[in-house]
Image (tube, rainbow, N blue to C red):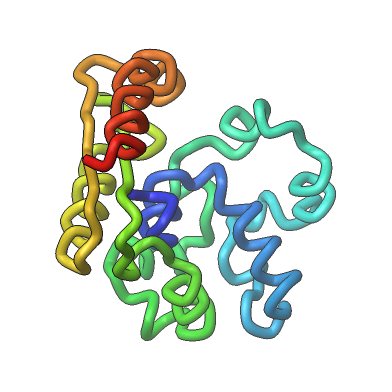
Length: 171
């Protein structure tokens, strides 16, 4: 879903992008991930202090979830016009390298999805399931109608337990 595809994550969860950008710049170098080119200018003066100091619960209210408010105009345009490879090649390469979950595995997986889920969207999750299955993975995908992201774990508890028992039983 959105958390395994960095480009989708950036499109759907702009409020999390500052943390990703900070981490990438810190790990890979500011020459490869220049936060000044990616973030809206209003967040730059206190960027590091904010990323390192804000409680995660305050992040959506601080940054907002509107990508055009969080990102620089150039990055936002490239992100939504699918031109990151041309406009931000170093960052795009890192986004692809850090997208995970599509390697073939014999380990069965269970994905649970709320519908509607504004954090990990059904569209992103179903794209991921399709690609993962195409790669040869065995995935059980449960979608819960009317269940928000933060309630999915509670609503799915019995199904998850039954799935684990099934796997342990050799099914």
